[in-house]
Amino acid sequence: MSIYTYRCNEVKRMSELLKLLSEPNRLKILCNLGLECRPVTEIVNETGLSQTNVSFHLRLLREAGLVRPERHGKFIYYCLPDAGLLEHLEHLRLWVQQLDEKR
Amino acid sequence: MSIYTYRCNEVKRMSELLKLLSEPNRLKILCNLGLECRPVTEIVNETGLSQTNVSFHLRLLREAGLVRPERHGKFIYYCLPDAGLLEHLEHLRLWVQQLDEKR
DNA sequence: TACACATATGAGTATTTACACATATAGATG
DNA sequence: CATCTATATGTGTAAATACTCATATGTGTA
Image (cartoon, rainbow over all chains, first blue to last red; front, side):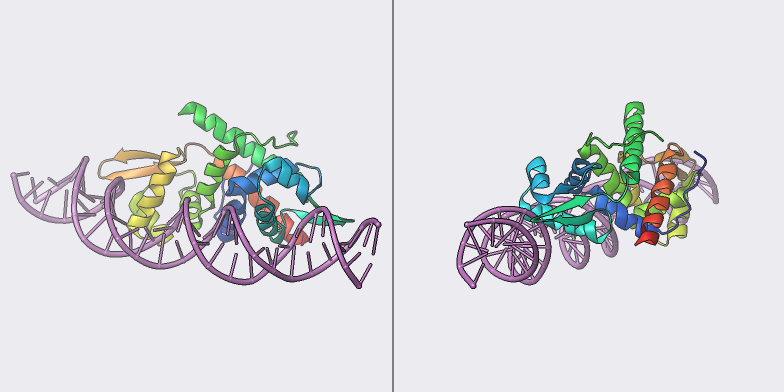
């Protein structure tokens, strides 16, 4: 890796993205999705959240382009647009884990 | 890069971290710090935020281990513990920039 | 010791955000 | 078309969070 400075570019946009990712239930939804597309009902079952609540969060994620809906018959499948997001989250997780070990 | 799945590990911890990073003024403080250590007054001047507000955010960042205070005489310098965080933020920024271009 | 400057903190308020309830929409199937 | 199932949405409320004001603490210097 060769990027050593974060130049305060687009603080507002970054903040929006991070705020979306920071809600525990949204994060759970995203990582439960993983790289597979899943219908809402399945997300509801896997997360244990109410249907209304899942739809509430999916709307925010969808409007931000973080998930993409695809209708197949009765069901609407939600998917991540690409694997990048999960990768970055995983790197961040490893980073904070190291941080916690040092403290 | 070889990490293709974010396994829902430590959703709570991740959510805490992301919540901290997601506040625009905190993000501004972090990237203004960059890799240099700076006294609070300088952060106040550079960000245009009130002293109280900067201290408020610095406390949260400090308690989470995201910044480290160092007293030098009258001044307390704040520093990032390592460059990793800024790198990850920058990667995320590039990712979301690409996402936005595609939409 | 007294004062000035740098920073932190407690308490109150305002704003944002998550969530639930009730209801609406849209597709499948009888 | 009527009904069932899947999902979305509007509105109200409760909880979380950012911010400000007033004040406290701590350090250097006269």
